[in-house]
Amino acid sequence: MFNSYEELSAYSAELVAGVVRQKEDAVLGLATGSSPMGLYEELIKLYDDGNLDFSKVKSINLDEYVGLDGTHNQSYRYFMDLNLFNHINIDKNNTHVPDGVAEDLQKGAEEYDELIDSMGGIDVQILGIGPNGHIGFNEPAEQLNLNTHVADLTQETIKANARFFASESDVPTQAVTMGMGPIMKAKKVILIASGENKAWAVKSLTDDVITTLIPATLLKLHSDVTVLLDRGAASQLDEK
Ligand code: F6R
Image: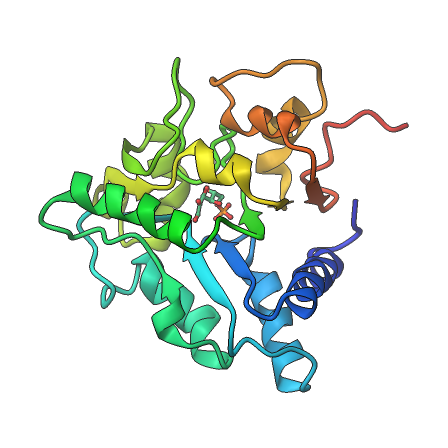
């Protein structure tokens, strides 16, 4: 647990940097949203200071809204370019975000899984967590998908993400998301949670239960997960 989001972010960047320094062509699984913003700022600093080289790094993002192309300022491709890729020496051809406007979304999803396989899987997967425990856009459900698929966003997620749009009705209702398979197969997972609205979901990571109704709980089965919390996100955990 970190006293501030800034400290958390600096630490997360050192973890990611460690992976890249060990393997110059590492595959980074990336997330969008508020949680990894500080991580991306810190990675840019490391690059600016000459301490990190992304020239051989490859990236694969978790998800993209259906209906938004990469030029839309709320698309996740736009987010990644704006907040990370435009500021480091990564080859954009090596960066991948699902296509939210593919004519055939299902085919696009299958190709995304083939792409992940062809990259040899993910070396380190960055995750945020939804207030409802979603990871990627694998939303709480009786069953979860292994593979990339088109997901209906829950009302709670639409509400949570409305802050980025002019109004709630502008939030897309579907997304193309990586399934649980590549996330669980990633060699290393770093989950970042910041703020009290994540406290309930974070608490669910500490009990004895695994349930598809809180998808992040499946991470308890992964052998290398680092969960980074600020005070707000840790606020429902018992002091030990
Ligand atoms: C984003 C993603 C989502 C977010 C989650 C938390 O690519 O896959 O699972 O990580 O909704 O969002 P923030 O960080 O904005 O609170």
